[in-house]
Length: 124
Image (cartoon, one colour):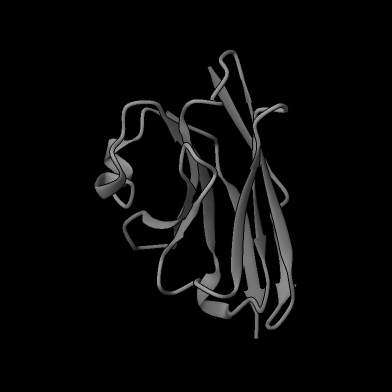
């Protein structure tokens, strides 16, 4: 199983970026897919996740600015990031799991599958 993230880059504050993550080797249509991020010197933190029913859940820091979505037919998950802030600068990772329960989705340690990460840099 592989997760391949793409779409990172440089954006100005207030700008937008869209991240994509393609899964291969196994269908995640019955699983959970989402995004985490890690800034230098900080722990990996939850950003957003799509639940099995397609519902999105967000960290408070990105709520109203980011939108997570998925295409089950294509085995992909996306993260549309609007109104970017310098504090959003981090390496973003896509993650997936089959067994996770809703109350545990915020903790990166509960995910079995990870992409390689894509850098997002927001300048002020």
